[in-house]
Amino acid sequence: MSAPQDRSAVESPVSIAAILALALPSSAVFLVGTLVAVMMIRFAAGLGPDAVAAVNAGTRLYNVFFACAAGINAGALALIANAWGRGQHAEAEQYFTVSLLIALMLGAAVTLFTWVGADWLIGRFALDAAAHAGAVAYIRWLSLFYPLIAASLVFGSGLRATGDARTPMVVALLVSVASALLAWRWSVAPPFGHAPHVRFIALGMGLGNVAGFALTVAWWRSGRLRLDVPVPDRRYHERLRALWHIGYPAALEQALLQIGVIAFLWVVAHYGTAAFAAYGSSVSLLSLAMVIGFGFSIAVSVLVAQQLGAGSVANARRAARRALGATVLMLGAPGLLLAWFAHPVALWLTGDAEIAAHMVPIIYAFTVTLPLLAVEFCLGGALRGAGDTRFPVLNVLAGLVFVRFGLALLLWRLDVAVEWIYATLIADYAVKSVLLVRRFRSSRWIKLSPM
Image 1 (tube, rainbow, N blue to C red):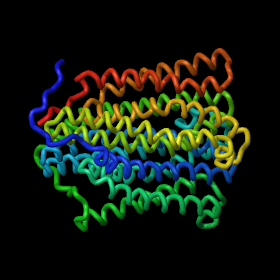
Image 2 (cartoon, rainbow, N blue to C red):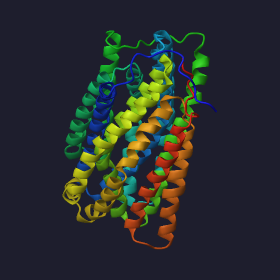
Image 3 (cartoon, one colour):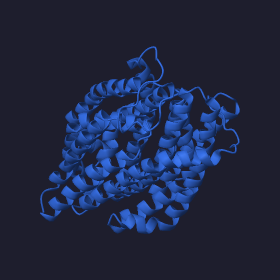
């Protein structure tokens, strides 16, 4: 297939300043969210190692829900940004409305499924009895808030698609502060005289999200947001098909990602509760560095979609390449700093020497992969922004499912040390990066036709 040709002149390519204007506020959103996730582990540590394992297991299942919502967000972001780049703001708002309705229905369905199946789902981790019971309670209480969380995610994606990354950042700050304060307070002194339990940490997180959603709705009703929420017109079914076409592969990608991580954790769990808790805690901690990449991934998706809508394939490519260079540099500093202080930080976070000892090699392995993570964030974001959401599914299958889980399973069967299990993530990201670079150099990733 030959490369699509630019059909309109664009005055100048996307600047680093434009990339940072979208990436940094988005990174801040993920940063504060990750800080809250880290603090949830810290609060749980006060209740003992079983509580830490419970929160980590519950978070894994929450991430599966988040993966499903990510499919809607990927479709919404690409289609809203593409329409906005063409100057068709009413069309962008119609996509926004349809995405919100789907998000609310998805959240309600996943809430019901989680509440009914929590015991069986948590049972896949093979935790001890106390950690299992805590994880079941944690995920059930948190699932009650899924519809509002899903709608809030679409609000944020829709606004970023128009170039407004600041409003979602402010809302995320409110959510994080409210969630952290409530979870901290109720982990020590739960309401109504109850004994401390991890379910109150989940309840605090959920009510923090309610506060953020309420602020978003208030701003929308006051007309402060760029996007309105009109009644769906007669073409809603066409938009629904377009969202499905782009969104379901993205949801499948994220679902496979979470399933692959859960399968990997299943292997890790065979080395004991300390190893299991260490991996989940390390991922939450390392996300403090990785959130920078998440922000650049969103920025690239928005800018690629907007540039294709404006008719410039060349500028879409330049935006991705420039963001990649910046991401490599900005991931390196916090990653190396975290590796340098790996043991004291791990000990502070978990309060357990055995868990902290397991965390150190995991942090070192992730530090090695930082340049590869930059490739996955930026080039993967470019593909999603251009509507190519199917290739990342194959990428996850190749890297995480076949390479990382396959190697981990083999090494476990060979009875090697758990440190080698942790190191398989390096092979995972190496394979995915090679495949993404090859895809980006071709023209097959440009699915949204330039104007």
